[in-house]
Image: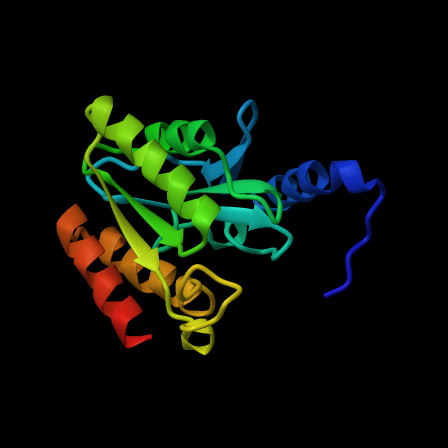
Length: 184
């Protein structure tokens, strides 16, 4: 994929602004920066949230919508999103049935999403997590902290998103995500 970069310092802001302008079904939030469905929160449905370092677009903001993610938290280029960003996004998308955080198995993502999970629990939000670690190519690598979450992430976001849209419970959505991850 080719990209036009005006200024390296503005890449993320410009990319997200363009995405939001091109897709009126999305809302770009500022301070902290995250993206949600424009109709969020959706009452009576489990909300799905994912995120990670930018630089692999359209991950994850490009997968927000009906039957997919409810929100996404982009970090800076190759940097995990911060816990406060994840917390604010989760609060914005929670329609009362809980929030499922879909986390790729990278050290920064695990630390920051788990910290946000604790903050959400303390705020009374029903929340659970699914860690995606489908990359069998690096199981015993000296350069990674276990199997990374890669290709299976989008499939899990889509299939679990469809389950949430159907009205499945938070626990059922989490169980489906874990089952799919283990089969990936």
